[in-house]
Length: 84
Image 1: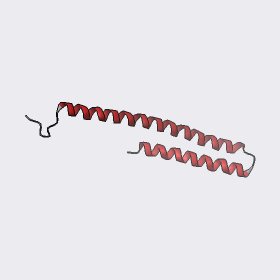
Image 2 (image 1 turned 90 degrees about the horizontal axis):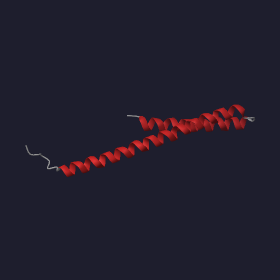
Image 3 (image 1 turned 180 degrees about the horizontal axis):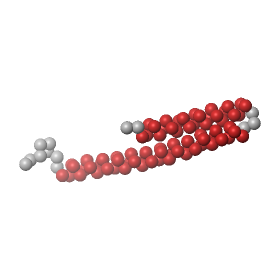
Image 4 (image 1 turned 180 degrees about the vertical axis):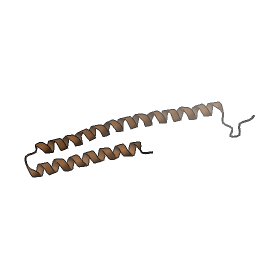
């Protein structure tokens, strides 16, 4: 039975090799961005903790707003990475 699209074995191997490389890059990039997002999440939570020890109301507001921004951004990055 003859193949209908005329692909040779060499062409199939080339396509598979390219897809495996692209998949590997995608997995590495996802792992790195996930790590960065987790670190950012911890930094955001640390800012909330610093707000508990701040002396002035302006500093408290700044730490809380900064913590909310960083925490929200890292959670959004995780959402974008893992939504399907």
